[in-house]
Each structure stands twice: as C-alpha cells, then as structure tokens.
Length: 85
Image (cartoon, rainbow, N blue to C red; front, side):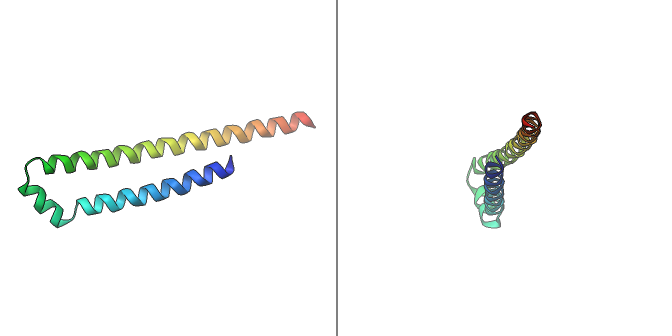
C-alpha cells in the first residue's frame, strides 16, 4: 500500500504541475487578446479554468481518501499482528 500511496502522490504532483502550466498558458496576454476578438472563446477559457479547478479539488479528495485508507490499513495490520502474538 505504501508503494501505491507514493505513486499516487507523484502522479498528483505531476498533474498539479501540468494544471499550473495550462492555466498559465491560458492566462497569457496573447491568449487573452485573441479571446477578446473571437466570440465565445473567453467563455471557453473560463470553462477550462473551472474544469482545472474541479480537477484540483477532485485530486485533493482522492488524496484524502487514500490517506484515510492507508491509516485504516495500518491500524488493521497492527491489530492483526497483535492477534498473531
């Protein structure tokens, strides 16, 4: 389980970095200037930002659930070891 937690944490960090890169690119002056000229593009950019925020929130929820599962697993393993003694 520890390996799974470590892998998930690494993937969360990589995904968060990618979300930051995408958000930064969408916020660039060139993209914003283009969005001002193309009807509907600004709304699409705002929707994309909202999707990134939702993804970030979901990622945090998954991390919390995995941390909780790891804690429960550790407690159950500890109790099992005590039973074997």
